[in-house]
Length: 115
Image (cartoon, rainbow, N blue to C red):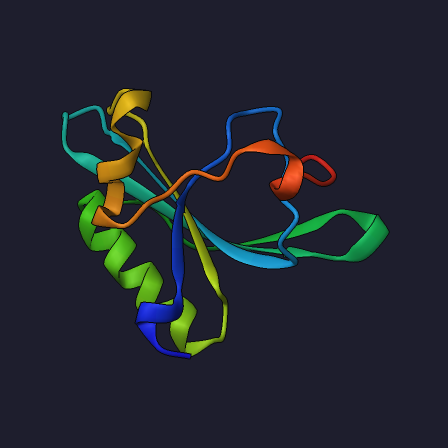
């Protein structure tokens, strides 16, 4: 899969659910020192048993943009079609600018068992 084929989407709100069987989740927040720290997880459905979460990096000092770029490359190399991302410091109205390519899906097509 090419990196250009990987979709980067704004992460769903807490309480909403994902339907993709496998995806990456990139979350960036500000650390105690004010610098960005990022966590990247590979999340996979295990059917009716729920989800597995494999953390690739936790609280890594990395910019959100750099983390998204890395996640897209990783996803493409493993045929994972979607990267969800959330940057804790940005207002919801700015979701389109996140990672430069994020888009938000509306309605129920992205919902399934809670994560």
